[in-house]
Each structure stands twice: as C-alpha cells, then as structure tokens.
Amino acid sequence: MESLNGFMVFVQVAETRSFVAAGRVLGVSASAVGKSIARLEDKLGARLFHRSTRSITLTSEGARFLERSRRILAEIEAAQLEISQASAAPRGRLRVSLPLVSALMLPVLSDFMQAYPQIELDLDFTDRVVDVIDEGFDAVVRIGEPGDSRLVARKLGTFRWRVVGSPAYFERRGTPKTPADLLDHTCLHYRYPSTGRLETWALRRAKGEPELALPVSMICNNIETRVCFALEGRGIAYLPDFSIREPLADGRLRAVLSSHLERPGVVHVLWPASKHPSPKVRALVDFLSAHVFPSTRKTASR
Image (cartoon, rainbow, N blue to C red; front, top):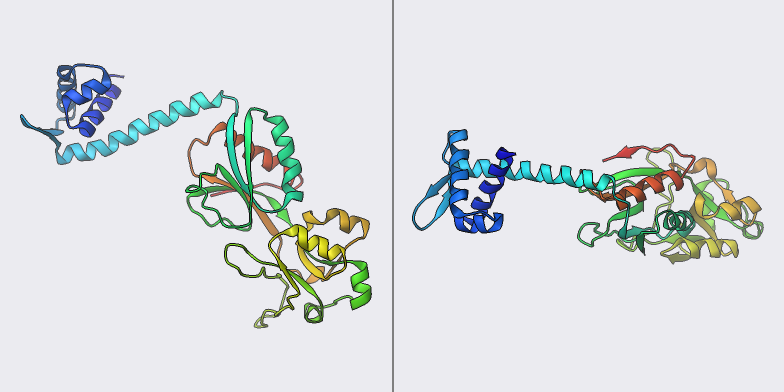
C-alpha cells in the first residue's frame, strides 16, 4: 500500500507540476508530498523530477515512469470497478441500436424488460450504420459480419434467406425454376440507407457468371413493406426466414429457388470494447444470446 501511495503522489505531482497543488488534491501537506517523492526516487535509484525554485519538470526517467504508473493505477481502478459491479444489479438507461426486424427482436426485448425492471430500455430501430461509440450507444444488434475493431462482437445465431411470393402470384406469373427465371418476374427490393445500394440476392451462380441484373419493380428500406407486398401478390421478395415464419407455415407465402441460395445470414450483438462491461450490457448480451436464436449454437468473436 505504501508503494501504491507513492504511485498516486507521483502521478499527481507530474500532472500538477507542483508539490503544493498535488498535496491539495491528496489532502496532505507539500512537505509530505516532497518526502514521498524523495522516498520513491531513493527506492528506484533514479531522479524523477528536475526541481528549481520556479518549476518542477519530469526527467526522461520520470516521463517513462509516469506512463507505467498511469497504467498501474488504471488497472487497479478497473479491478475495483469489476469487483463492485459483480454484485451490482443491472440498472440504468440502456441505449441499443437495432435493425428494422421487429419480428426477430421485439418479443425477446419485451421479455428482457420484464426480467430486468431496473433497466430503462432506449431502443433505436434503424438499418443505417451507426457509430456506436460516437453516438453513445451501449450496444447494437446487426445482421452481417462485424467490421469495427473498436467493438466486441458475440454471434447470436444464423438464419436462412428465402425467395418468396404468394400462391396467387405464382399461379398468375409462373414459378421460377432457376435464378435466370427471375428476369421475367416482379422483384421487390431493399435499399441500404447508409449507401443507397440495393441489397444483393445471394443466388448461386457458376464461376465467372455475372450477377443477375434483377428487375426493379419496388424499392423500400424495411422488411415489413416487402412482406406486405409479397402477401398481396405484388411480386417476389428476398427475405430472412424469421420475418415470414407464419406466412410460410400457413401457406400464404411459398419459397422458391431454395437450392440456389448461397449463404445463411448471421446476427451479432456488438458493444464498445472494455475489459469490464457494465452489468446492464452483460445482462443484455447474455439474454439475447440465450433467447434470439435459442436452438442455434453461439460463439463469441472479437
């Protein structure tokens, strides 16, 4: 503890450039500060400050020691925070950004709210790319692979893409048997708000074969509109299976070209990198991991 106190005194002197000011912050006399620095220098066998009647400046050894001292004190503070938070109940405002996939997230978030009544959920539904740290989000849920190295990511699970239409539409226009058949159909598209680009339908094609330029009959920036238009027989849509489970089960929508779809989709929850995430963030991550895709094996990534 004496060594720790020496670190704290040294850092205060280095930051204030004054024994008097450091003593004022620490609640001790300037003389006590000077004696503490002298003992630390004797113990290290090195001079940490250049002293004059007008100023106190770090030596080169002092500058290096300051960097290490700050790390040591930060680690101690983090360890104290971790211990204190371990027994703390998750509480407070929790700001979360989520994609526009209410069928996937809303029932789980409702259950989370019931399970953690002391957490105030602040939910922002958008498909634009948010800056988690700069915009002050505690966590985000996103479809696709994570791309921000400042964030920790946990995979919540995977889903299948489906190309779907209503029975009435297929009776009227015919059922596509190959991806190329889509060129003669009414296709309902999604536009990414952040880039303005249309979502690619991941249809398997031969090596060297160009991507199909699908007809564009309607464009929107959410799932619900495409589901509605497909149910009404207005065209064919490319949708995640979790958004259309009931219509597929009861026959209001039919899936086509299933053997031609290339890859599954993946959902992650991401939060700012920290050795000690807050209890409310840990509670959200663990709850989503257990309930969003309960039958899917979860893995963590960074």
